[in-house]
Length: 174
Length: 174
Image (cartoon, rainbow over all chains, first blue to last red; front, side, top):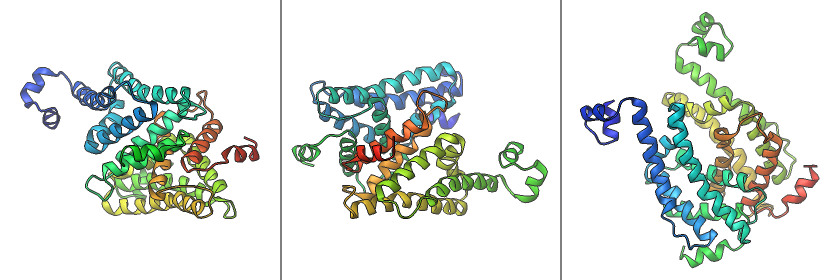
């Protein structure tokens, strides 16, 4: 309980005063991790093209994972240990987050920027590839976040049938 | 301990006689999961083209995950709870398995079947996308293993810059 109190920046005593069970502390941690992912996604300007929008989503997603590997683990795994009611709250936020990716891929297909057979499966495939990063990425290693983001953006663009990802790459000075 | 004995098909008593610690039981479980993945990969005929070979690797990988979600979870996560010596043994098998994917992608690039900028990152990206399946796939749901495999093969082929994945699809009667 003391470890959890430290993790949420509270004294052990005041933590007990505020929060009734370990499960609520876990919910708080998972929910804050959800905030990190969602804040990034919601801060992206609405006037971008689907390609530009998706590029920002990829960068933000990898940044949250790489900068806070612990929070990513909590977001991806620990929510399973919540009771059904708290799990539903988190699932709704996870769905909302996944929705950011799905909607931009749908928009890209509609505007002819992406060529995708099944948007739902393509979204899952892309998010899966990004999520797994927390298993193998080591901050401080030879692969910088910037280089990872650029490579993964190019791979996602290929997956989604974008033809001119090289020109985007140059336009952004990468 | 009784649960573990059941999981490895042994009586509680004989389990204690054979295996010294819970850690060895865990090692046994992780190692058997590794067998499932590696057996599939090693059974693929050597005379296939990189594209055909990769298609078999994808099918086998998804089949092991979907048919035994528990084993996949053990293989992907529980090995982290082993001691360093046992972890090294599993890491060697994980690396060998990843090597099957990396080598066939390398061969595809060499033969001009695939167009990939960074083979290591492309391999990680593809395996990540496949691995995450155990998080969301529900056996008995509307998406069959066959349909998932076909869609994911097409997405992987696009990721790796294969141009003619439709023709492969038809040649296999999919």
